[in-house]
Length: 175
Image (cartoon, rainbow, N blue to C red; front, side, top):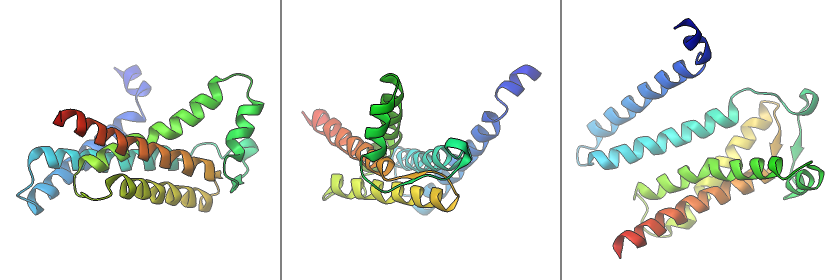
């Protein structure tokens, strides 16, 4: 049992914290909005958890970059093209680009699923993803971590993909 505890040592407190936060969000939404269905509350809880996951994954202290120095890239597509050209294989660029996009897909999908926005859903969701991603990069800059405009571009695209996926699912369900 002790080995199991050590193996999941960082995950268990995070899981418990997430469960408590989800429960609190559910309770607050249920008490403040008695007209919301359990399904709507559940989607809102998942949306809040997606924001928490983005914050945890992007802001949790890890290595600062090469030799512990802060890197700032404000030239669009510069680091992506550099990574593709200098990679020893396709795995690293695909993983980096793919994971940056994938990180924000649930955010966009759940933003749309909340159904709080009716008009210009894709535009508003994408702009919110841009704002969240830009905020994360700004915080990373002030924390002395690597900041990259390419991350903002890829994260925003991921939000767009999530919103479009929700609209596509909605159209398929109607037919």
